[in-house]
Image (tube, rainbow over all chains, first blue to last red):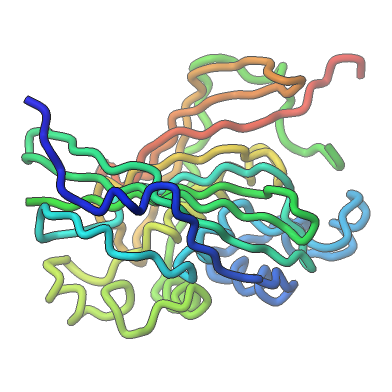
Length: 149
Length: 147
């Protein structure tokens, strides 16, 4: 039997924007420190320059931290009482380099139920696209939140 | 790819395993991460009391940080520009100050749009076999053909 979900379907196709986010060397450095990242391409300006970049590279998941700055509306899902971060996907489209300025644009990607041994959960997936100062898409991030009965 | 220190596409095969690579997210690491992330503290990631009120055993590693740790393990192996797609499911809360074992198994190798891609199942486990985070990754590797 198909489960009929109640939520605000008018949110499909609506983009929610935020930014610009300045990708400074300090931001990358602090991110590196918090996860113990030591690769010279992420930490050393001279190494990154020697490889042809204008500054150090941002580790590929740095953009995932910026997503929370996008104000997303309540989808008014009429299901469940618990909500938790169930999954996340990052797709790197182009290098992100210190000095870049990124814009974020998020939209509701899908809402779907899934039934397993522990019962039914409903997943809400938001997708955020990051674009740099040249209009180049550099990354897509999907965040999935589960609501449980 | 500059300064290639990682594997070449021709070096890897289906079923090959990467790791396990052992990493630890300390209390300080998580506090630093939350500060940067902009998540107001204390929270369930940094406070025993708040975590317990949320039904957790103690403060946990944020999912976003678990992803960063797994990404780091993969780029350590394959190179800083190699990771194209990382798709993770957060299965269990991840504890602070405990060994986190990140591993990957190669499930596909292919050439696509001029890139040499490998696909992996990735896993973050605890010492007692707890499966904290699982998922898939797509990694681009350089070729050594013609060298």
